[in-house]
Length: 323
Image (cartoon, rainbow, N blue to C red; front, side):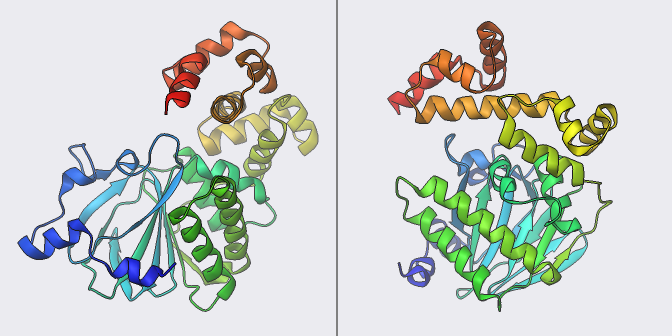
């Protein structure tokens, strides 16, 4: 894949900007009054991650987005202002932006080729299983916790100056290629690659610059998320507290304080997400799926499932089959 040649081609949006000297066409990015770029404009319901070339030749006004964004500078540079801080990304740099960050971007020139990763926050539920609290340096762990659980409305970013780290550049390119040239195994492959990329970034955490927030004590949160990921069928707060050698009430309080969710809510969300995945990718009977994810009360499952997704399991599976 000749990515450079592909990125150099002008998009329809870029052609219009050059021809008419237009500003950003807000309707392409959001339906909201405020400039909050919506992931729904780019991600279909069944997709968790995609890449999109950053539009050149136009200033992007101050905006937010309801997804986690990663800017990757393929060539040239990217200048932006986050809050009051001006940041210039050079070739090979990565910038992680959580879903509450507010920033504005200067117009890119013809040779400034930037790839934007648009990522549903839930995507990192699976990526986090590759990591442990001992391996995550504070600002990296705090970024993901706050991104996943809306810990702060102020926004955070991580700027990785990693152009000379060959392993990181290779993983980024592998992810881009997998997204742009998908196969039946791409979804699983991308999660694996992203997990390996995170590990490489953590190894080189000395290369990260961040907007420092008041860090949370996330050690037990990370271990709790890993426990839920691996034991969602039979997980319980008391069992987790026993494994961590913590009183269940203090552990419950720590989880709630860090994520704004109770242990029960986190567990329920994991079970429902897993059931949705099984409805989409398996032929198991619905009753078997309900049992598989750890529920015995079918009517209760139907009620919480419809409350979360707006469909019954049967109707959701039918929609998947049609598509």
